[in-house]
Length: 268
Image 1 (cartoon, one colour):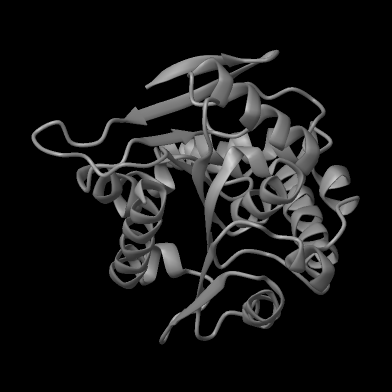
Image 2 (cartoon, rainbow, N blue to C red; image 1 turned 135 degrees about the horizontal axis):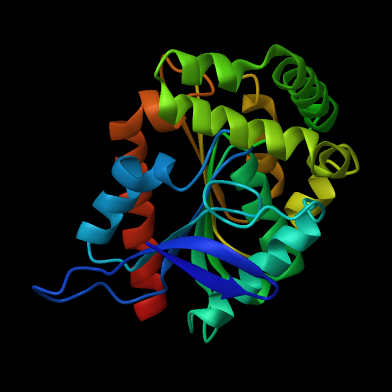
């Protein structure tokens, strides 16, 4: 793991090269985008990144601005700046010579979709894992984050966890407190515009949307599938908004199948 200079930030990155013991599938690198606040690159490390790399694809994981071990500036948590961070990181690592596959979980999926709309030159394909897309998700997420911020600010949860010897949880909680209460994250999320059917229709990259059967976000995915020119919707049974953790095997099969298909298309 390393800190990579991307513009004015240092972003914590993990590079997993594709296999070197045989032919490697042609095609772009795979870049993973995690969700908000308590999430970081480790969410993908064992669930998807390792299997994707073992299948031969070069993989890039990174902690987004303010998360994990990356720098936490006080501002810049809007999607436009997140795309700028991503572009700067790809350039710093020499991955800007061609498009990359983006795989995003939850809010990371929304960021992947936004990237495909504003910087299609960066994107070969999208995999959206139970991503926030339509409806009142901005208001709902803002409310959830605001409640969490108040609880962390006044509950002294990280101190209680540290006193119990739960150091890792204490560190994660302290990081969440700093992100929610000492940056513009909540304000920036509140100012985000929800995607529309017109946005979906403008997509010019293939999309795989993987959602849980009981996810409250599934209606948005169905709208995406109806409106986007090239979108496959995969609904995994008996799971909600925890596809990455609780339906890993089914998700892994869908992702590897899609990457194989897109690699073939690039080669052709």
